Image (cartoon, rainbow, N blue to C red):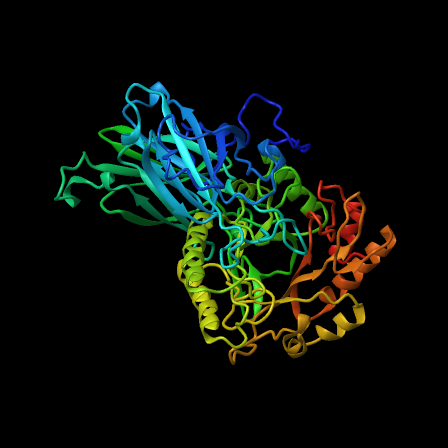
Length: 610
């Protein structure tokens, strides 16, 4: 049952800190401390902070206040300054709850854009590069025994560097064209949690509906290993892992085993299927989820407990057909930029995610292509719960360099690792429209980079299709994903009559394949199209084609969707786009999420009912 209200607010109305919900719902511990809320803050435009050691107690002119986890560019941060401030500092005091005494204390930061350094009580705790992925550190040995601790975060952005993985964040002063307001610094939840030395570090859950089992890989801290496996240090008592799986509150399976290695793997059969598995598989219509708990037991005591969940679903390509749970599927997606008027990249509340998902489903779409943003895990959690398919896409750079390759490859691996367990994610999209590889048509280095990303992603996750370069200029790819903003219905109808015509067309004057690659029978989807501009608010803006009335808008919508649904070649589409964003007014709803025409009328067009 969904708990958030269907009426989100752009502001927190309670005394709880902003975004009070647990930030990592697929790996949840009962005890934690949310550090969101008001922090001391400073711009460091003169770059004095390192020289003057602002990370030490009493140093630095932290004259501003900021509302974490909202970036200073956003209204909800309390600052709302869209200018260039590439080096910023955060500081806040905190106390560790007395009941956590004797535990290891881990600090987590959900996302901080772009390069972060963290100090606790003036001592270095962690560094991280990447604006969309989480990081953390065990800060136990840095804490003051008498209490009263200080946390300082230095965040450095590189706003004008077009080789930086950035997504839709613009490198100029004001938003233009398809680029929007920048995000600098902390933009997802900061929190603490107590853990035991013997603990679970992460899990990877892989459903297998063909065998009726879930495969699990469990990763443990070094201190978890039993005595026999450690020779260089004295080990603790042996640890036993206990896994319990349930469905709708009913026990399904339980397994326990000794922890002997840093990684333990198990396949657990699920013998509770009914109707040949259809009753409990995960689908958009029935987003069934299994609950799972992991416990580590040492000397008869539970020293770690983590709760999670998984969905039994399969995405595959069979004889050129895209299939969900071994049945051909036609995907109706909408492009979702994940921007919010008051929060920029950060949703004001958890309920805002629920509202966007409900709007998407009410308009007849099965899923979203989350565009140029590695979205907050809370969004993916609600997609898992509510049954919305997601294409997981990277935040790309705009130009190529060797430094870009290093930065992007690292962050993309972290993103795939973070989101692997979400059943809603069905396709990986590491590249979009040759961003980061603008000369891929002729530059062999850039071609090989795209190939590398394809194979790297497949090596990290063999269960999901991977797209080489969404839009055009592809080489080895599991799906042929074409971007085509043609608006004339007869032209689209003729273009997508056959696979040969579709793959030899040149939308935006780009070849579909480069580097000697050719179409090899992969599923063909049109993954950006439409973009009908229709102004229904005070917001000025642009789109790919314009409507001047509700009737005209619906007619234009039908003119671009019908050719794809009647085509015997196209296996799905992704319409541009869900919402208006800043100066871009080609959304189905306005920036503040008001539908431009009745959602039931949009649904009839999307579902081919008129």
